[in-house]
Image (tube, rainbow, N blue to C red):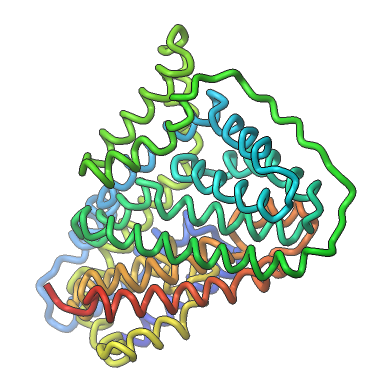
Length: 431
């Protein structure tokens, strides 16, 4: 009992440090892995366990943990290279420009088309740089059409998250962490993407009714568009189409998209553009790669016998196994995905998921269903996201206001997603 309380206390300390932003997740996750590992290892050794503390810390956590998510790291790198190709070639700007030209003057139709095209772009582009580039194109158009800045920023958050669900790098992250087949994860991507799309549409319709009588002074956005061949504009969709319909593995699908984008836009400067995209792509995701190293350490620490022996019984006592219990448990606790909390797979949730999987407390598909659904609470609403902060500053509204505006719709998405997973897809059934 005391062992469990000590590990829980360590867990809560690092939760506090991350939630209050006193320590970035980049440093807090490996520090938590080492602290939990050291405490659990010592207690396990004292209780007669045969595991060497030195082996547990140096080999299991630091050495093996740092490379545990190597596949997810490479998915992220290749995805970022494609992101650079789409942005540097002018494909993203051209897609936004064409959408604005053909959407017409009706402001809600314009908002719908721009949100849809933003989502398409974010199926391949990633990072704050992409948010700033596309945001500086889309936000002035939306505001200039008469929509309020706060509504426009919320719509952008939904579009970014919707595109992110279909981003192959995200698909690869869940296949790597949860050891699920690409086929299973693809199914969740399609359904959860559809449900989040409906939530975004509800936000657009309900918010649009309130926006009917709003007026803003027109703002203009200079969209510098290159003349590009029409075939280049499908570049963001190439990896998705190959993965979804032809079962091509993730990295070859990314490479196909990179080559398509470069060869269709700048054949003469292919080598230089590819080199620049690789260098800038790696640089752009360097913080994410560091985060994945820490996540791997957390997973290895939490899934090891010293921690599992203490924490698994505690989690087993609170985790529901009945369908409705599962739905209401994760629905009520969904806000714990905010602020790198215990239901955030890119924060403390990695450790929680590791304990659940190592103890076989829930089926892997149930872990996927729960964390993927509540993860959108973080993806859309979290005030600590860098893109939420930037959009809030651009729109001159607080991130708390964006949270309040978007969270009811995301909560509805979580409810629908969990119900579908449990009652229509058998997520709770053990393999």
